[in-house]
Image (cartoon, rainbow, N blue to C red; front, side, top):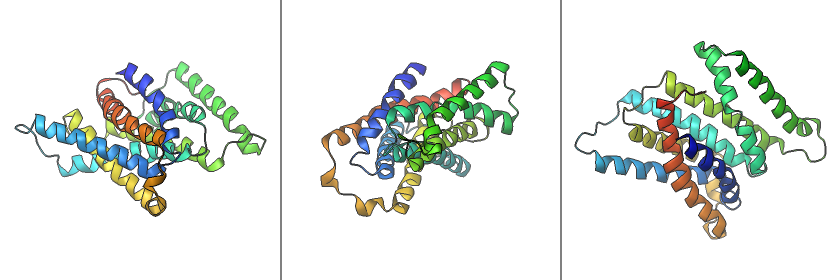
Amino acid sequence: GMAILYTVWGSTYLAIAVAVDTLPPFLMAAARFGLAGLVLLAWVALRDRAALRWPTRRELRDSTIVGGLLLGGGMGGVAWGEQTIPSGIAALLIGMMPVWVAIFGGFFFGERLPRIAVIGIVVGFVGVGILVGPTALGETGALDAAGLVAILISPIAWSSGSLFATHRADLPRRPLLATGFQMVTGAVVLAIMSVISSEPGRFDPAAVSGPSFLAFLYLTIVGSIVAFTTYGWMIRVAPLP
């Protein structure tokens, strides 16, 4: 599972940059996770139809919260931010997610941090300061401020959703069913964000390039069905930090 997350998700940052070159970011992300979620739910329904139990109202609510944070705030922020922020910088900033997990886990759930973790948090923030310093100071080569804010918000939303999923959420017992609902509900949140951003009215399907379409397919199949499903399983069986 860790090997899939490191290799596959590492490649998705480049794929996102290619996809949003001619695809609206929120609309792209909504379609990506909506399709993946429906495929996953259909697979679960066909495979386990005899023993399948429809999620309770609380399970649907918590799945919506997790999907909204992970996909709406997390993936939506990345997709929007990578319109102006290079994918390599985005990947480095998203790497702050374990830092936020440690901070929020300690603050909200009383998880004690070993000294080495505190040192890592300090080093992480120093690294982010080095990356965003030119933007804050208005120097030459500064990153786009709005895109940078979106990228910085993404790991905060992702870590919040992950902590809620592991500590407070009541999710369907079957991991594939839970992941499928999170994808679909997250896609709904992303679609709302797309409408608020007036993306549907500006979207021209004829303007979508071949590389963007192939990147979208890669993100849907490999980045969502494979990698996000793996992450949903990992946070159930492995320590989150």
